[in-house]
Image (cartoon, rainbow, N blue to C red):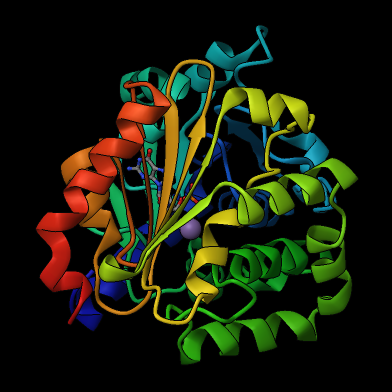
Amino acid sequence: MESSNEISLVIQNIKEAFDNAKNIIVIPHSYPDGDAIGSALGIYLTLKATNKKVSLISPNGFPDFLKCLPHCDEIILANKTKSNIKDLFNKADLIICVDFNMANRMENLEKYVKQSKALKILIDHHPEPENFCDYVYQTTQASSAAELVFDVIEKTGYKKYMNTEIATNIYAGIMTDTGCFSYSSSNPNTFRVASELMKYGVNADIVYDSIYNNFSFDRMRLLGLSLNEKMTYIPEYKTAYITLSAKELKNYSFKAGDTEGFVNYPLSIKGVIFSAIFIEKANNIKISFRSKGSFPVNKFAIDHFNGGGHVNAAGGESYENLNDCVNKFIALLKNYEDDLNT
Ligand code: 5GP
Ligand code: MN
């Protein structure tokens, strides 16, 4: 999105697409986080309020801590539902993708979206979106996809359908993607939108409490293990990282979402500006990267770990074993010595 003329043209196109659509599908990215689910539910509920047929299809499940979000039980999980996904795509005349910039982040849904003749809209805040949608409302200036979903709803005139449940979902998306409004990605519009949403009755303390104070005892102990025994600090590279093996996860009855947020802890060590977590999954190692300041972890993830994301928050994966993957990471740091010490 460039000039204000271009933005208003995109909004005009999106408004017409909303007005004309009868069968809509909303899609978040695979292994959706709070922003993906909050954004998707926000736009889904808004369009559903207009009596259109709307389905929210996620490539796969989302963590338990998001199960407090209003109407999340209506989300269709593509990996769990055999029945009518193909049929829904055949009937769809509008597909709305939220919170991702690469088609392969839809995993099992990518083929349906690519084959579909429906009009496609992307609402996202990741850099350089791939060209897989007709209308793209995107800027990296936004804190979250949820902030942009609000902007789209407002600018297309669909705000008249806003209610407490829609506002709560959008608020939860913004809250989770900004680290409760603590990251540098928050901007004046982020707080404006949060303020607008609260006017619709969002209970900010209850949203926070339901998402962040609802973990299992095992998850808390896994965090303890991660910080006490599984974190390595390399002061010369201002880097700290955590590794968790599949066996350790099993010992602490790991459930999806339990390690969410762990990667942020090393950044609270004075002087650390780069943190990573390596988590051994069944088929690969899932990696999350975080940084403070200008060190671009998305570029690091793209260049070395088949990933992507934002300047200060990115992720990737590796098909090596956990040890080899971590050793590769450590060896790479030397190449970034200057960047990490500026
Ligand atoms: P997280 O570390 O919380 O999983 O993800 C942080 C950010 O990096 C998110 O914005 C997410 O979209 C992006 N990200 C995480 N994993 C991947 C990945 O495997 N590929 C790409 N392209 N982006 C990722
Ligand atoms: Mn996001």
